[in-house]
Length: 244
Image (cartoon, rainbow, N blue to C red; front, side, top):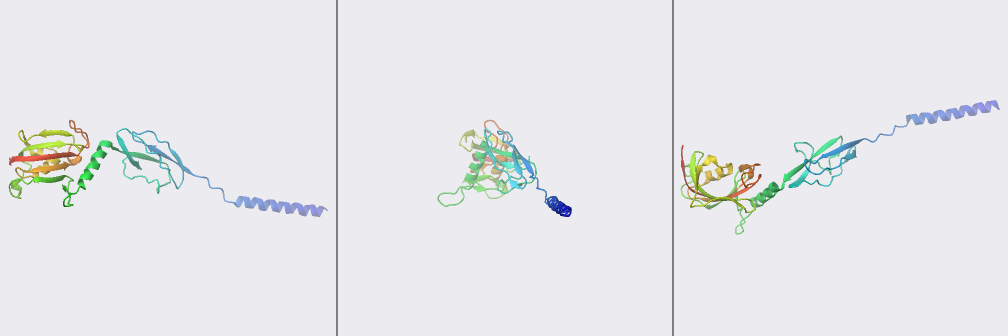
């Protein structure tokens, strides 16, 4: 009887040891790792942070709102270089995304410029404007007099007499010098886009031109002209003379 009890005890001990060994050898459950995705709205309304599992996608939040601006997207760096793609970019660490905005006036000007850039002549289907390397758009209303050599055109040392009408993209006129009261000035005293078109013109020529804001007043306000304004001019060159 004692021998049976002893054998039974040994059997139970062996079973217990086996169960213990199996439980020790079992893989430890992996701890779920998460990261925080923060949103810097750069002047817009606050966007809540997200807790995201490692190697998964963050959820694209509702676009933030900022008065006077249009939201462009979320970017990985403060300098707004690489846009975050919520459909493919996986979260592998804590990140802070930064909102990129475009001023509504700037956006409207840019869209209008692109529309004009692609504009075609109804009759021929050719481009309405000729584009220079700088992005300036122009069309010749009247060629003027003289030949095609540089002597028939103003240069950086020239004094010019011009008339012009300047308008914003929405048609609002912001400046005018009529033909009966022309402006006399040094070519290099004008904005870069105006200098460029004057260098192309002959005496008595009339051009229409669209000057990108980078060749105009840039991100500065000039009187009634807001920052980032594309400028449309009709300009006539009465005459010029060179001081050098």
